[in-house]
Length: 179
Image (cartoon, rainbow, N blue to C red; front, side, top):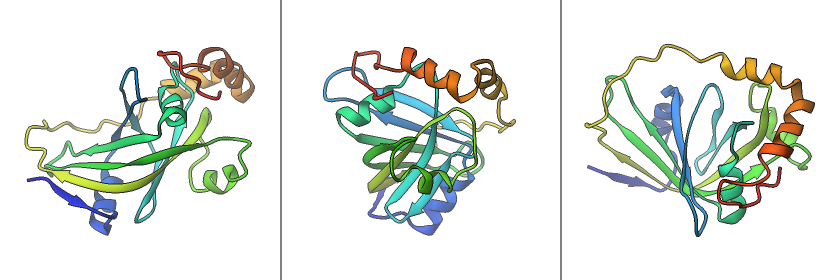
């Protein structure tokens, strides 16, 4: 049975911290809905109403465009082990980027991972748990190494800035991303 919460309780935070994977969904007022998987040591609970994570340079920048256009976001954690649970966080998000006055204070809370293009900060309005009985069990095998090799091939941060300027300027619906 679904249950709603007004804040991030310690046991919900512990559940999030045990997961290796989470999903982020955003949408502009018009256009495509975006749903992206995220993983690695990138997610942090900041307080009872705030979470944040590192967002990396990639082939698209839908989240960045949708945050500029609307800001609504849902984050979903789903257990794939013995525990059967789904947790959704609902709220409004914003982007913190290099050059922003608060960039350094946010970045210090995360590991240094090459290719970070923004930190997404979600102000959580509500949370919902549900059973997850229909979710199959999977075993976590580890992180992939392809991303860091891809970043190296781009020539470091300067190469990634050029890539973002060329490939991450607009969403697939033509919305500006700010990169």
